[in-house]
Length: 204
Ligand code: GSF
Image (cartoon, rainbow, N blue to C red; front, side, top):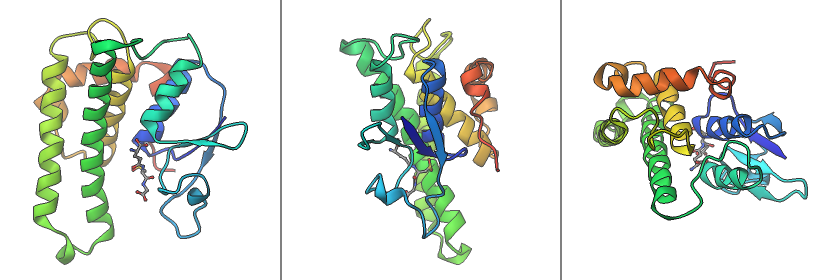
């Protein structure tokens, strides 16, 4: 399997953490999807990373589909409950964490790609509102549990950890650690895992 991605994308990190936790072999091909000459459309018509290229050349996307698939191909470190409400709850956590990222990334791109006078303050405020509402909900759901779903590490923790880590990396002004000490405790615990330590975002 070949993972097309980058070392800064939180969605790519989600897949890399799952690969590491489940001890799966893959090759990692870095791709800058933001340059005109990117090849990403050859593997994902949506032009997004991560994209997983299988041995037969077929491709899987997006990160939720890839993570769910990877969990089925190895019994090591099962990250999703087999069925029912528990499975759905893990996927709500993933939708929540990914949704916080989607909103924050829209702000990041608005500020990166538009001149200040062309940036929409209303749009930025709307998206940051989703980020803060999502963080509040993550903290409420976590409570004082060891992990997002209680006592077991699941895909919910992978998604939440990647979201918090990317916010710390790109939005240091958002003080989720101060606002939500339980999220800070979770993030610190996850950061000790080799799968998180070895995939922390950095500017190459
Ligand atoms: C989101 C991937 C995504 O937005 C997933 O994999 O879960 N729902 C998808 N990837 C970004 C890079 S990053 O911000 O993580 C991406 O590829 N953006 C390029 C574009 O044209 O939007």
